[in-house]
Length: 431
Image (cartoon, one colour):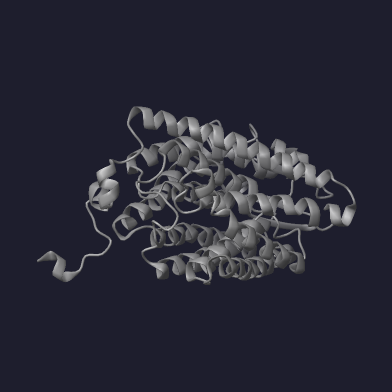
């Protein structure tokens, strides 16, 4: 088998795009918190980049994509010394450097380590997403412990359930994770990434409790331009996230790419209309949040919908998520930056929507409830698994070393207390 240099370049570029999403998330989240907590907020994302990147190479890929002596797509490309730690040296030999990934009628040949790098960026952004729920009140060291443990016992196994599979000649799943074998449609991570992270975010929000003075309107984004910049970087990187999940530069990747324009664009409109009707003004933060909600919803569905149905999904996701972010005030949990309202709710919308409108298998096209049942079961399984374990991990950390900062540090802003830095140092403030 000869190396397909075009698809190899495609995979590596997509991996770089997805990695850029985490700094984008740092700006998005950083602009939403108060000025004296922006460094702390952004450090939670960068801390995840450092820690999860290392853990993925050491053993994460081995957990997520090892099938004993065989790796993804039935090839000898697992990572691990005996499947446990580190890269299998054979992955770097010229004889075993190539991996065939079959997707329907398309095939691509590229190094297995390119796939490993691509999937590493998914692990990083998934963990970083959770941090928005605990903004303004979490210790950095406690977060790093949580991130490492949660990635190990939740993300890596769930990624194996959803993403680790082998396809037969007809394109059907013949082996792999149990969720994949059920026939779930989750092209780029509605369950493994967004529902997974959103459920963990809800659990941590409950463990850490409410911020001091928590109330609707009490906390205003300190830097909306940061929020817009972050949303733009996220949207840019999301093309690698969705189109790259095809693992080949082909027609399916092009469809995923187009739907990654259509759905979030429609979600911006859906969010802004609801915001205007509800609050009287369409805001820049609302536009950015709507775009992210649409991106979340289209993630599992980007290769299984026509562009028209992607637009419909975007409008629905933007409108519903704009309403869902107020649930925390009605139900009494403090999800600081609306990870639950955008990622958990948006992920559920995108995953369940496929049960109705997925091309060929959705209820609207097939008349069968089978796909809807599969989508609902997989979403529920990941939600419960992630929530329970995240709650137990977070509670154990809180009861031992403490997860939450002191109230006085929270009120003053935690940048100086945790990192000894300020996000904004004006010249006259040094006098």
